[in-house]
Length: 329
Image (cartoon, rainbow, N blue to C red):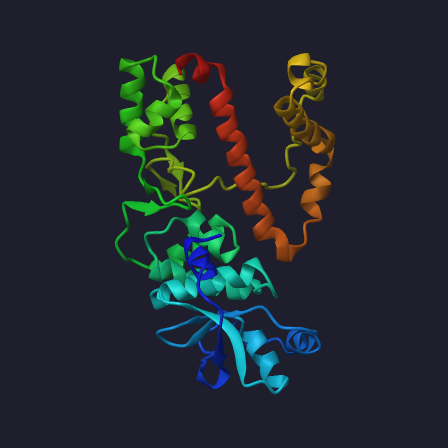
């Protein structure tokens, strides 16, 4: 639940005159879906309360319910007010329309991402993606297209509300110096001090050990060489390129089987939960290609984003349980 949505849930439900409401500014480019409206007309009982932007009386969430109420011949409808800025009202409208009811079409979500990238330029790609239901990579493409030649921000606000720099080169160099001068520091301590993610801190440590440059050279998405930093995952999640034959994912199922017989894991609730997760991945390791090839196109963006979020969770888990992290903590 977003903070704005939580605020709305505490607002009283009142009866609103339908004639006073505006249905303009909807994130649905094609307008109301008549089939969905007729399904609501046929529904028995009261419809859930709508959400209305009080300063403009624009319907933020519930346009189909308003159409259904009119078809029923009703003059009023139950609703709650939202008092925030108009740009935030649009963000809330998009969020509510992808979280329940009739989903927004992909074209609607992309157009919404364009508007939000302009109205909230300080938001990270992941934060815009979470609101609009598309992948962070797609948001990054949209941001480049709509931003044009405007000045590049030095930082963005992530989903957790934290401000993160787009250019992590300074943070990487600081992390390298901290690790060299204070080898006892944990990855999380270094990451916090250098304002980078724990995963970036791990990469810096690996580069220190291998003698590689702490600030890697990256390539622009159009293939042109570009020198710079590897940004924090919050702003630019990994983009996988899969030309031709894809490498088959490898998971050592024998290791998982050995863990299954470990009493320290088998006889505790947390251990059994961990084994279930590992077993699930092990069981489906050979099916990845079939799963990838059969994801419905209209779900691809959302599934890809969820997969990246799960990968980030496992990466953070690996960072926190790794021997180096635990010994240093």
